[in-house]
Image (tube, rainbow, N blue to C red; front, side):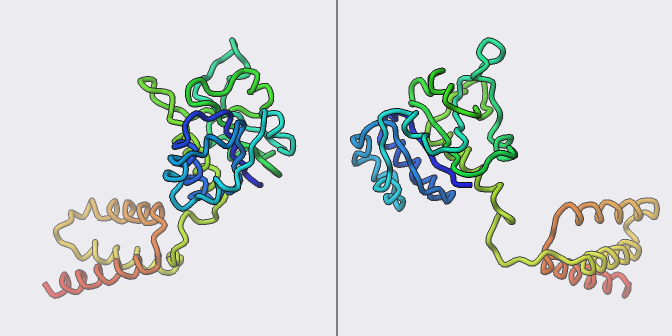
Length: 235
């Protein structure tokens, strides 16, 4: 799946620069703009920070239909939604988008103008329509913020693990040992009423299994409970 961001007649260079920055945050490299190069003003390059190469490599088109000629799935976006009165504007959420089975090949995510978004004519060119759920008090998002939300959902869905950190998940043996030591600690603790001890063990087991703790975290807790257990046994 190759994600391409397509902006239809953006009005503010600063927004375009901010979009380039968030594209680089989420490993998207290709930017297409319906409009001309004058949008890439000084403010655009300032806001792009270290993603200036995305602006430098941006492709420009005279119309949305030209910009999507080689796109396999065109995804329109807007904060203006509807129901049966306008079937073109019945949306799915960004989270529903990432679960779509047909997201293969070149995927164009189309964003409209800052003031009035995508027109109904633009949406007729789109295969899917996505809208970000927002508060009724202020439903329309800033263009660059909307791009960030949708690209975030697409990026996270592509990862096997959310963070590239050196962390080994606790093994079943480590978790079983931790639960055993915790059980011994509870049984030896005279401050816990007998009728509560089994409940404490059950709750701790569920917490550990929900937490997806690392091996080091499990071993650290084991050491803490062992030390406390020794102190309890000395009393």
